[in-house]
Length: 85
Image (cartoon, rainbow, N blue to C red; front, side, top):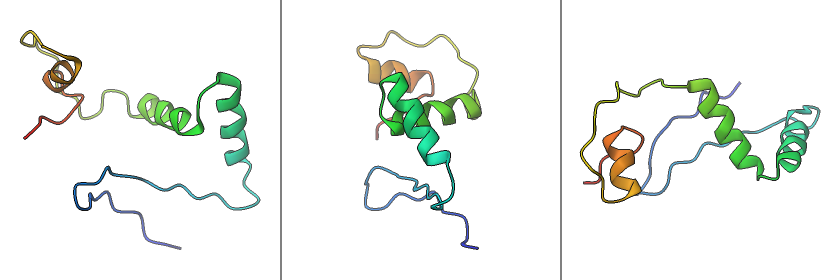
């Protein structure tokens, strides 16, 4: 058994997680079929599933945010994005 994948960022690159399925596992086929039915890429379906599973985990109570000039500022204010440095 391989050790769990670490959640690390390398050289400022966008973080990634790799999911591998055995040749006999039908989960991959089911994900691709469902994504096709929904008209979205499989990656978007996986992101939706992760968001649904994790819910509000790690999000602070939403307090009134200052008026945001753009979506990035709004998402940062509500804890959906890390603040820019």
